[in-house]
Length: 440
Image (cartoon, rainbow, N blue to C red; front, side, top):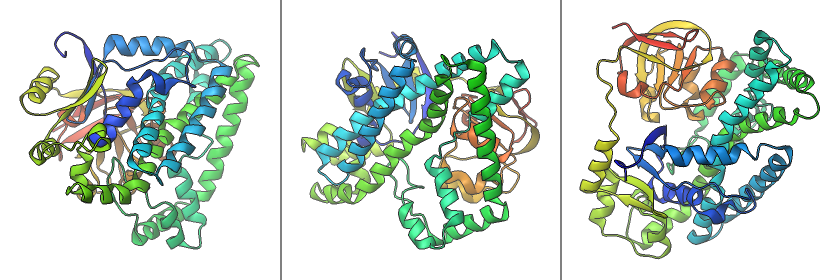
C-alpha cells in the first residue's frame, strides 16, 4: 500500500486506537457525510505511524476539489447547522452506552476533514478577492486581524471566565476537561487556576481583550466593505473556520473526558486497565471481541492505524515496522528550517521540544517552544517563550492565533522541526523571513 501510492504527512496527534479508529471511520464512511455534503468526500487511504498522520496525495486532492465546490453561502449555513446538531448529539452520548458514544464520536468526525480542507481553500479565496480592491499592506493587516476569531474558543472563554470569576473552585469544575486531550485525564487544579488568574490580571487581560475584539470587529466591517454584498459571506466563513478549527478537536476531547468514568468501568468488565482499553479498536469493544493481552500490550508500545480497502485496522509487529520504514524521512545534515510566518519578529534562544505536559518542567523563560503544534494546556510556557516553532498548522491554527495575541515570533508548518532540533540547541528564529537557523 505505502510503496504503490504517494503519501504526505500532515499532523501529529496522540489519539489511541479506540478514538482514532472512530475518527477515521467517520472520515472514511460515506454515510457520515449525509446531511453535510451532497457528494461525500471520504478518506480512502491513510496511515498513522508514530502518531504522525499520512494521507494519500491523490485522494486528498480529490477531497479538496470537491470541498472547493461547496464554498457557498448556502452550503456554509447548512454545514454549520449540522455541526451544531452533531455536537449536541455527541455530548448527549456521554450519558449512554459505549455503542452510542462511539457512533456519535464517529458521526462528528467529518468535521475534522471538512474544516482542515476548507482552511486553506477559503484563506486563498479571501486573499484573491481582497487583492482586487485593497492594497497589499491593507490586505495583510486585514487577514492578520481576521485570523483571530471574534467568537471565543474554549481556551479564550476559559481565560475570560477565570479573570472575571469570584469562585475558582466552581470555575475549575466547569473547565475540568480543558487540559485533558487524547483520552488522558489531567486534572485542572485549584493551584494552576489561581496562578493563571494572577498572571492574566497582571497582564491587564480584560483591557487587551476589549482592544482585540474591537480590532477584529473593525477588520470584519472593512473586509465586508471591500468584498461587497455577494462575497462578504467569505468573511463570516473564514471567521467560522478560525473558530471551529480549534473547537472541533476541543469537542472531541471534552466528550472523551466526560466519558472517562464509563470507559474505566467498561475496562474493569474486560479485566483491562483504562489505557489497555484505549488501545482496543472500536469494533473490538462494541462487539466484545477483545484481543489477547499480549496484542494490546504490543499496541501500547508501538502501533500503526491504517485506512485501506474500506477498513480501518491496527497494525503491530513486522508489518508496522515495514510501514514506518517506507515513511521514514531523511533529516540528516539539516542546518536550517523554513516555514510559514504566523507572527513576525526575530529572536535567538535555546530549543525546548514540547511533546507532553511532562515536558513543561524543563522550560525556562525565553526558551524557544518547538512542538508538533501548540495546544491550550501549553499556555503557562507559551507566555514565557521567546518564540514558537511548530511542524504543522495553517495560518488559522492555535499557534498562529496565539502568537499574534501574545506578540511572539512564530513560524509554523516547518514539517520536521521536532526531528531536526534537539533540546539545548541554540537557534535563531527569524519570523520575518520564515527561517529557523541552528547556531550551535
